[in-house]
Amino acid sequence: MEQSVERLFGEAVLEEAASRFGLKAGGLKKLGDFENYVYEGEVEGEAEGEPRILRLTHSSHRSEEELLAELDWIRHLVEAGLSIPKYYSSLEGRRTERVTVGDSYFTACVFAKAQGHAADPANTADWNEEMYAAWGMLTGRMHAATRSYVVPEGLTPRPSWAEDELLQEPEKLVLPRDEYVLQRLEEIVTHLKGLPRGPEAYGLIHTDIHSGNFLVEDGRLTVFDFDDSAYNWFAHDLAIPLYYAVSAGKLPEMYKGDRGAYAEDFFRSFWAGYRSAYDLPAEWLREIPYFLKLRDVTLYLVLNKKIDPADRTPGIVRWLEEIKDRIRRDVPAVELDYKAMAAGEAGR
Image 1 (cartoon, helix red, strand yellow):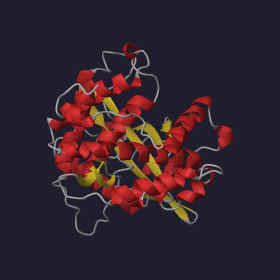
Image 2 (cartoon, rainbow, N blue to C red):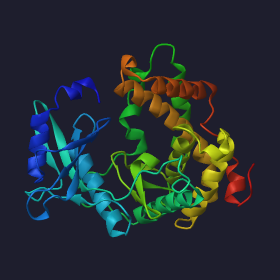
Image 3 (cartoon, rainbow, N blue to C red):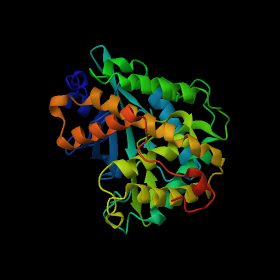
Image 4 (cartoon, rainbow, N blue to C red):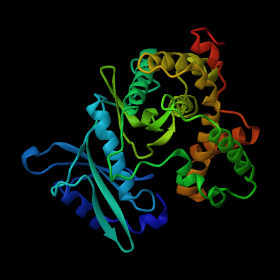
């Protein structure tokens, strides 16, 4: 979290937000603070002890209107049968609660706690072709459901991909000697702006369905964290799982460091699961490298925004160097024969 926001946040804000949703003031457990402050707490009253997830978002990151739009889309997906934690209204019956701090504010939302456990790439009982296919199927079902979503009258729509705050003034987040990042970003954005936006391939999507944003229970995936949901191409939601599968942490041991072989196996199963739920034309697969490259650039920007160089762990430093090297060479995190895989061929 940026230091300017850290200075505004404190126990008073947290306790006020918790009280408005009927959560016990004591015992709140902090789960994260990268882009939002996220806590696990328990309900008082009739649902005594039932776990809830409290999220507080500063207005410099998202407006209350954007969060209301996020919650309405979640409502639509839950009603469509997707495994997504529902939100809970406050004691006053509001979807969100605003806690003012000076000239800004935090918006509080509360969700059900997702059931299951985090998928572990080192555990083949979790991390296998069946899970990759389930991951793809979940993504496809979300895309099928979003096609029928209509923004209610009076509600501000979620932003488009081009309105991402990181893309507005990227030069402020680029460090000296890294100017090539801006050139690469311009090339990617120019290409994407030329793509068609028909409803079969473009709409409101999650944009961040990596393994840190879902839990697994008996083969069922429950996805959460819709903070980055935006209007974007469906192919973006195919690229992000692939990106993190090959670039975050260690590969499954059986691949002995062969990133390409793992990526092919992963995406072949993911794509098969996806196509069982949504029939995206296969020609969109050729756009995946552009979304992989865009994720490299946006990660470079957000890490510079959120983490001071002096506070970076050795792991973050190494990851950033890998990202910068790919951006400099204009290559994606992994290169696959998408056409061959779409046709059910080996692709190696």
